[in-house]
Length: 174
Image (cartoon, one colour):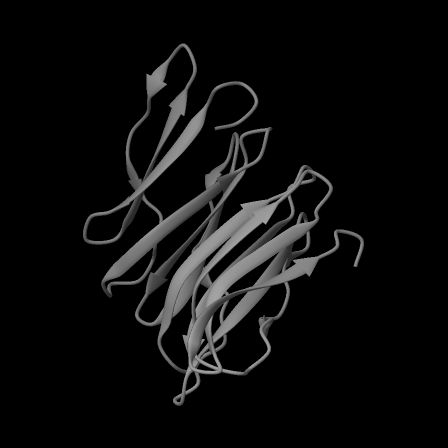
């Protein structure tokens, strides 16, 4: 939901679909926001106070994204991960300036690693890189972000034969 009570819903129905709720008007028309014919799953969305939004999802073992701009609608879907092994559990969070961070787990052929990519408002996505320590299989990342752009990512990772919770912090001015 944005600061005006408007919101965006995402779901999987032979692709990734979206519908926008506008306060005092109700739901609009559903529209498909992915551009790939492969099975898609795990859609997530982060909405800025102005109503702009960023969606992420898994499709064809890649992490895809699309950006919604109020007044313009959805853009063109694109991948934000690195080509390689299977991906899972994409998540996204947004700060007060419209910047975002997406996280997911991705296999390197031996184990899952936790990856992230940062979106800068009016600049776009940067390059994806890992954020975990590489000690064992890592899955289930979650991300939270405050209005200043500080973020915390958490995930489960095998360490010394046990599953442990790990975290990494991103400072908004970095």
